[in-house]
Amino acid sequence: MEALDLLVLLVYFGGLLAIGFFFTRKTKTASQMFVAGRQSPWWISGLSAYMTMFSAGTFVIWGGIAYEFGFVAISISLGYGVAAFIAGYFIAGRWRQSGLSTGAEFIQKRYGSGAFHFYTWFYIIMAFGTGLTIYALAVLICPLIIVPEGWFIRDATTGFLSVPWAVAILGAIIIVYTMSGGLWAVLMTDTLQFYVLTLSVLVVVPLSFHHVGGIGRFLELAPENFMKPTAGEFTCIFLVGWMLSNMFSLGASWQFLQRYFCVSTPGDARKTLYLFGVLYLTTPFLWMAPPMIYRVVNPNADPKEAYILMCKEVLPAGMIGMMVAAMFSATASMISSVLNVYASVLTDDVYKRLIRPQATEKQTVRFGRIITVTLGVYMIAGGILIPGMTSYQNWVLVFGSVLGPSLLLPTIWALWSRRVTKGAVWWSVIFSIIAWALIKFGFAADGWFGDMPSTQGIINWIAAHKREADLLTGIIIALGVLTFFEFRSRREAPGWQRLQDAFERETQEPVPVVDATGPAKVMAWALGFLGAIVLLIAIFSSEQKTVLFVCALVLILMSGAFVYVLRKKEVVRVKI
Image (tube, rainbow, N blue to C red; front, side, top):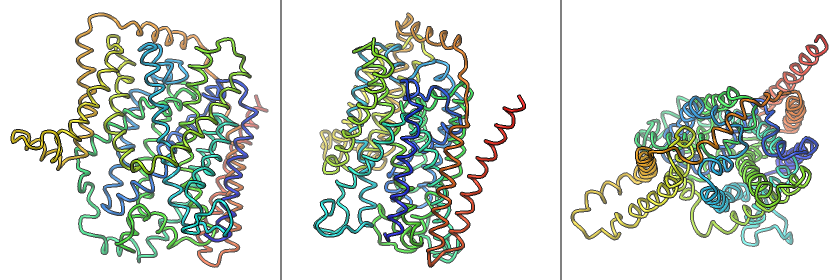
């Protein structure tokens, strides 16, 4: 990267920290810190949920799949959109009707203390691996940053920025703004990051197609079957299973539940996921295009680096810094969401309810900030230590396809079922792990049953359908266990009435008033500032001036649109 790229990155990081400090004054209570006082506009919650699904994995894992297999990466991403509409229609509104603040609070009420502690500590243990997303980003950007000799953050072997130090620096930025502004800072930085990411990709895609001679030329040069919706191990069965797995994630993962709890009404919670769905049914064509195009440019590249290499190929100075900022945005959105939601659980459900019920709001918020920093350091440690143990891709796919359904399905099921008990949680997890172990170690070619003639059919099928086996195992086992408990139970589960009491209390609470002027002001300033940065890049750039000027104009016009909406609201207030 050139000096202009580094300047863009530094300014961008400074802007994120400024937003965090700006919302410090709005974070005076635990409700404001962890559910934004239930006053988030649905469109901000929707954009934040959309960005939460992103991470460096979008560019490393799915970008690598796009480079290797082509359109199948888009097919995988479109599954998120379908999953969002299903979860939005059936699940999101019911979560908001409950009036709860965290997923852990639901587990406590519905399944009891044992399940509450299991879910809480299991998720927090797994959060150690969330640092891998920062590691994946650091691996991408470190080769772009040359560090002078003698600096302690320099990798002595390569001369570039050291990966462990990059993980620590990037993680520290996320910790500071999340700790300062709570969920409001997470929501607003996610929204800003959505615009940065969209702008960057809207620049990269046309320049990439132009680089290879246009869309028609790309299609001519692309490998055979490159535009097919399925390929290799990513079959139709896998795509359906992956969609279902992500429907469960959107319906029960704690970081997404937070996006439904923070809006004012059940209808807004549904609209949050509808917006998510619309975006994921339209934008994957843009996200996956650069690595697909790079396959034509260089068919022998490392798939994991295809995205950033395409950007380096076509972007002018300054815009590479913006693209790196966009990749950081994707990762930061996921990390900040996880940080805030787990800090919420440990503060609200452990500290406030179990350890110190008499704590004041000031003490609770202070503890929340301390635990946010602690969890952030814990995740950074994971990002530095875990890479030597396993790959990021294996971590994501195994958890998403095997452990995910066994934990998430009992949560969704219990929203409606009055019979299912906490035993369903234990047996769902136990049987899923046993089934996964049998697939990986029992029915492998050299596994426990590899020498038995009667198992050869199963072994051959699993060898040819690895991804489907993982997905089907996780989903079918969990569904089977829950169905068994549903029909076996003859009486109402103890936690059902506690949940109904929560629903009843929520119907008596006044609907929070949503004032979008604060978020709109932040967006107006942030987009105007970004527009000014891109305008400066255009002035000093020696290439692609027209594209850069157009991007700057778009950002400034968007900033003006927010100002226009704000002024209209002020006029309405005066008339009233």
